[in-house]
Every structure is written in C-alpha cells, then in structure tokens.
Image (cartoon, rainbow, N blue to C red; front, side):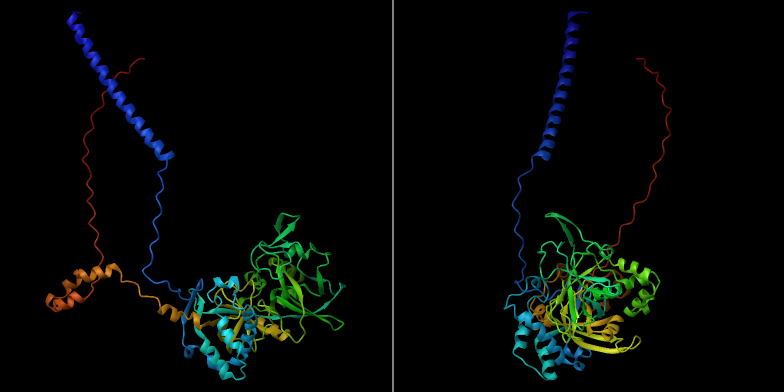
Length: 516
C-alpha cells in the first residue's frame, strides 16, 4: 500500500476511535451523575423546613355546644315533655338531694374523670341551690327542676328511643358455715386479683377492662373464669363470706350486684359489688333465646329460673357461658336501708337508675316516659318518672340506657325481671350547659364561596330556557337577583373507535445461521 493510502487509513481509524471514546466518556459521566442523584435522594435527606403555624379560626374562643359521643339530642320546652306534670317531683327532689351530698362534699373540686364528660362538674350549682332548700311541696320541687335544668331529648345515634331493664336486691337464705344443704360459696375479692393502675387493696375497682392474677412480683396472667372458680380454683383460702343453697341464687345475686343473706339465727349480712374477674358479661337469657329454648317474647328472669331448676346439668353449662364472675364485700346496712349504689349512697326504690358510667355523671336527672309491664307480664302501665343516676353496671352501655332499681325482695324481682323495653329519655342538663344557649353564641359561618360566585355570575338552566319563552322569564333585574344552580356538565362524546388498516405482511427473509 502506498504511503498516502496508509496515512488516510490511519487518520480514518483514529477519528473513529476518538468518537467512540467521546461517546463512552459522556455515557460514563451521565451514569455517574444519575448514580450521585440516586444516592443523594436515598441517603441524604433535605433539611426539614419549619412547620407552618396553624391557621387561627376567624371565630372567638367560645365553649362548644353540649356533646355526648354516639348520641343525638333535641332541646325541648317543658310543655313538650310528655307526662312531666303528672310525676311526683318531691320524691325525685329528695333522691336528687341525696346525690348532692357527695357532690357538695367535693368542695368545688370536681372528680377528675367527670371533667371529660358532657355534664362535667356542672351539677355543683343545682346542688348548691338544693342544699339550702328544704322543700315539702310538690309544686315547689317541680319549679326547682324547671328553674335549674333544661330538658334534652336524648337517644343513641340513629335510634328514636332509649332502652330500659330492671334490677333489684335479692333476699336469700344462707349459712355462715358450709353444710350439706348450704354448699355454694359467696366469695370476697381475692388478694391476688390485680388491675393495672390500681392498688390491690383499692376500695373501688372498675367493672370493665382486663383483670389479672398476680403470680410472684411481676408475672400477670388472666384471672380465673366462672368455670374454673366453680371448680374450686380459689376454694379453701378463707374468702367465703357465706354459703347459699343454689348456684342459681348466686348467679342472680351477681347479676344484680347486691344481695341480702338471712341466716337461721335471725342475722343478716348485706353484700355489695366489689370486683369482677375481667371477662365480659354474657346474658344467659340471650343464650336461651339463641338456642331456641325460650322465645324472646316470653323471656323473663322467672322463666330462666324455672328452666334452670328443671335442667340442673343444662343450668351448669348455661352459667359457664357467662365467664364473668362477681366478688362481693360486706356493707354495714340495716334491713330497713336500701342497697348502696356506685355513687356510694343508698339507692331509692323507684327513683334510682344505673347508667353508663363512661358517659354520664352520678346525680344527673333523667325523665323516662313510656309503658312498662309493672302490674303483670301483659299489662301496659304508663310510666313517666324523673329518675336520678346513682349506679352503674357492666351491661349498661350507651347514652340512653338505664337499669331501673325497684328495691329488695321477691316482688321487686318479679317486676324487674320482665323489663326489657324501649322508652323515651329526657336528660335534665344544668342551665349553665344549656345547648341551645351555647349554640346561639356561636357565630354563623361565612357563606360558601360557590354561592358568592353564583351571585356574581348567574347561570341559566338550558332546559328551562327551551321550555319557556324568553319574555316569560321576567325582567333582567329579577333574574340577576336569583341564584341559579348550575346543572350537571354533560360528558363529552366518546371518541370513535377506528380500527387500523392491516398492512399485508411481507414474507420474512431466511438468513443462513452463522457458524461460531
């Protein structure tokens, strides 16, 4: 090859190699920059900017209206409370004054748990007024409630009425020692029962939430359930207060939360709820209904007793369906005094109720109205009575749910055992928390921006324009004052589906395979 040709080939080869090197270098630079960006985005976070301060509402700081979780309520006038004028207001006033004693004893400092509830500590003002009023006239008692409270119709959200059941204090035969006849133990609270946040010797333990059995210093396990306790897990530890004849008697005493036990020697011991074993309550009546043993419309406490007496083996299984177990404590009360409620004062038969302790404050008046089978199972006795919240129960859950206390003995047991009825609830709210007055102080919010825009740019409905002539639409001034509501914007027509023309496929050229 001539020297000139060699030089041309060398220059051409060198230029090609130089271009390839430039391309490779640029590719490497781009890849390196992409790798650096990926590393920075995953391993080097950007500095956090300070959070923007929250926007202050353009309204003054006013107390919000009265609010109970999961409830709906309607302020009423006293004339709209059905049966209000027919009640014995003096009896209700005496029961309310009894609830005021522990409220006034707090000397202005409300209970910490009550502050989170809707009523809060507002009952202190009506109680302060009642402390100085020794009323002996029904009309004056009625005036007291009307001047210090506002009626509020209340029910669970989405439901028109509340729901009531009844409870009482059983009077049972028992023995101080175990015999062949009296061999069912009534236990006091065990020393190894533990609830988080409470001392083991606390006077008052909650009736909801987990309960543990403390083993040693630190180990906690769930406490024994009803079946294990009936099988003797805590027997022989000196926890027996008394002995009963029938385990059904003990079950119903535990459901009621209190009992009177009369001994052969004429003595009596009064028992009150002290603690439970941490398992949720299961209604044995509901189990019988679900199994088809007793129809729902015939269910009563007496029906349950009769079935359990006729079916001892089935009764044992039925009791164990309710794993909850109640422990009692002795209270120093005479036979003439009523059982003590959760508020710490004796209850009043026909005036005290148990309510949901998580929502309501003890001492709150509730006017309950409807019809109940008081005289017999099929009777419809008008019931319109002002009741006072003084007790609670693990099965009493909801804003308009109450257990009516009817006293002690078999007659009270028969009445309370057949109550499972919807009723109207009117809650008496202290005037300081009147929801109507509080809501009236809240300013009306600004109009929605869409309404302003509609006033500035009125639109007409195309359908109405075609239906009516333009002359019938009125003068322009009238049309400009009317806020027109724009109709729905029609959707665009769908794009037509166009199938692509299929081109004839060319025959593929067959290439010979390379041999490696």
